[in-house]
Length: 356
Ligand SMILES: Nc1ncnc2c1ncn2[C@@H]1O[C@H](COP(=O)(O)OP(=O)(O)O)[C@@H](O)[C@H]1O
Ligand SMILES: [Mg+2]
Image (cartoon, rainbow, N blue to C red; front, top):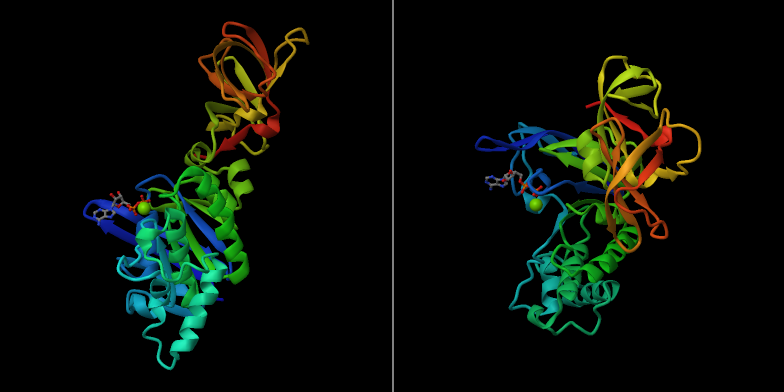
């Protein structure tokens, strides 16, 4: 299985740079999620890779085959890729077996019996044996999506492209299908680009995540890297809930904002530089107010708002002597009330300075 390399890809629509000098490497057999909000260029990127769109600049490589460059473009049907869409895009007038077998119809030298056997095998893989003669309208959304998956896999593509394939399913089924897609990936090991706007989905399904911001890759890494060491404000804010505190570096390892002073997770800040610090709500702890005085990374505050979420409680805490409000996630057993004075402890390792 070859990998995929995208180098400096750009695609504009009128004044809009949908994909803007995008560079990304997907290793052989890797599943990379393209994750970002609506309109950040995920679908456009996937369509460029599939060959449905032609880039204005940049190159697309699969292994050592160049599929797209300034001088040559390989048409979609010769790219050895399969794509799965949010809408399933099944043929309504064909049965399940005919839909899955469709891509094999024009295979030269493939006997009908071989084709039927491959189709049955693939239906077993996606747990739809027995459904061969049904039409798409006689299937649930989840079953239709499985047919679309079988149809994509049966042609043995080198590269699999999926565009929000689970977005039309209800929440429970969507969670189940995440594990199913991961299982199929581990079985077949096809190099895959998986587009989604759902961060939990990207975290469960992928080997690595590429976060897209306005047509560019903002950061690539494992789910843990992206969550724990976001490199930009955009990534910190998009992946999970966070507090972003705009401050100024006072020393190489501390920032200030008004009377607030925080030691942070690095020691290479340039004093005087403006820094945003990302602090995850669940990394902030409540301390006993009787214990000592407030100081660096121990802050006094007053509870402004309390939201009970079942598995956690979300507090908004106004920090004394500043205009900062921090959100704190705590276990539901702790029930503090609005107006109460509290003390917060924030470990320096939880204060992640962002360069941007
Ligand atoms: N066919 C098109 N014509 C004009 N603008 C488009 C077209 N397709 C996408 N765009 C614009 O390009 C940007 C990226 O779109 P898209 O790749 O569909 O984003 P995503 O899939 O991340 O939601 C958006 O601003 C969108 O409005
Ligand atoms: Mg899209």
